[in-house]
Image (cartoon, rainbow, N blue to C red; front, side, top):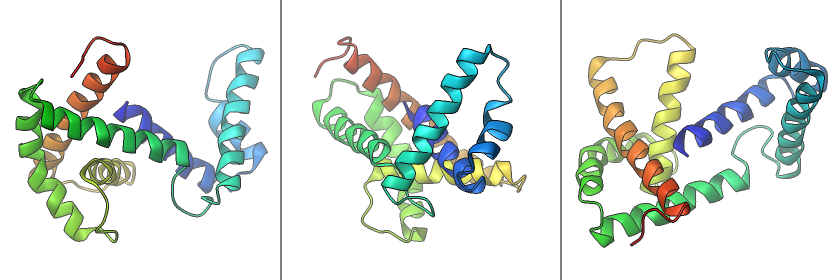
Amino acid sequence: MAEYILYLWQVEDLLRALNFDPEQIGKTLVARFEVDDDTRLEIYDWYKNLASMMEKERVTKSGHLQFILNLIDDLNRFHIQLLQSGKDPQYPALFQLAKPVINEFKLKSTNKDEHDIRLAFQALYSIILLRLQKKEISSSTQTAIDHISRMMGHLSARYLQHEKGKFEF
């Protein structure tokens, strides 16, 4: 789930970089898939639908699509339930390792009112952007991000198990 959300944030940024130009979307994003023409058209339509949603929701310059924010909020509610339930003793330990990093990121964030899970996504995405820009990431920053990554991976796995009825509170 976390990887899917981060991927969608990256797609949003790619669509912005391409100025939502259908021709550029086809050349840059769709052309890299080695698939038959019908599948290529489905992929193209998927990108175009996302672009259309971004335009309708007025997130063409910045921000995220509402359905993605809703997923993050769902994960946050699940995160709170997981912490309160005691059903997964490993998760609170992972959260305690990640919490200082999240708090530090919150101090640097422009929006201090974000919940921990949204801040964790923002921290992970910041690292993705730094890597894409081939900027150096210090070992201490990498270690800190690893704590968030492990926590989010565990949270995502439990969330999907819960969605499939294989994990209950």
